[in-house]
Image 1 (cartoon, rainbow, N blue to C red):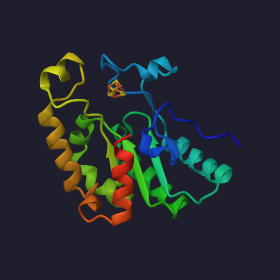
Image 2 (image 1 turned 120 degrees about the horizontal axis):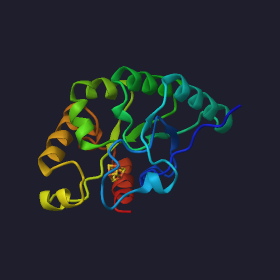
Image 3 (image 1 turned 90 degrees about the horizontal axis):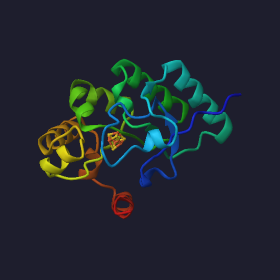
Image 4 (image 1 turned 30 degrees about the vertical axis):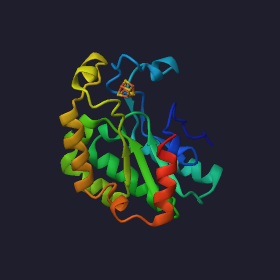
Length: 187
Ligand code: SF4
């Protein structure tokens, strides 16, 4: 059995998560301070087929069991793939790992905006959180770093994510879970 492909990076809060690779590298790849994917051998952005990702999900269950509490989808911008494909992957992941409490992914703010019409469907299919690298709220610094985003875009895409139901649970937190998030978020 071929082992699942592994991600290059994940957020600190996903240290204990099942890691599933949906895309390879970053579709933007221009931020001045970054270059992480190129540095670790993935200079180009590639999407993976749904069947390939599903094979990895099944291999992960066979290798590491099905008792996972959280899963993270990478690399930098998995929502960039076709919306139907992304929803299908989320549904399959949830079916294969029914114990999952939380599924998250990295996303660019611009992709959250482009996928606005599909965010509620992604949430219904099992997406609970997106990790977006804001870096700063200064438009001058965002331009300097070639981030490809503005403070306005961050606010609008963040609101779209919240309105779709993603991250909503933070408004009605289970106390212990919310405290755990707060502790992790300052790492
Ligand atoms: S969008 Fe993120 S991963 Fe892509 S180049 Fe910028 S910081 Fe790096």
